[in-house]
Image (cartoon, rainbow, N blue to C red; front, side, top):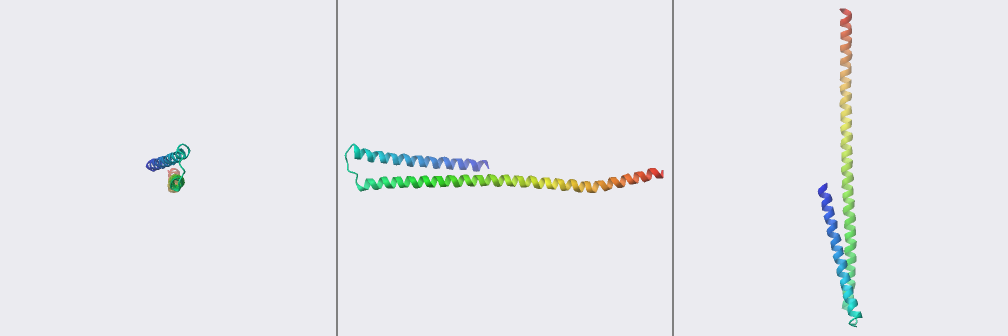
Length: 128
């Protein structure tokens, strides 16, 4: 279970780093476009606009995918933990039931023997 948690944490960290890199790239592209338009007076051509739009769309898609993957991974880990807890509870219940049954069987076997021994002792004492 520890290995699963470590793998989940590593996957989440890697996905977060990917999202951060994507966001940084989009910000850099946006800043470059703004600088070109404002400072240099360059008219934004269609290619630059398309590049910026594609970069923004890619970042949005990556962020959505990362969020979905993180949610799925967390749900899977929670399900695994719940299943593990349920299995542990079932094992404990089964062990308790077995112990109770064994004690009951022993009591059912021992009590008649004790009664027989007591009766035999009482009969022997009366006879003697």
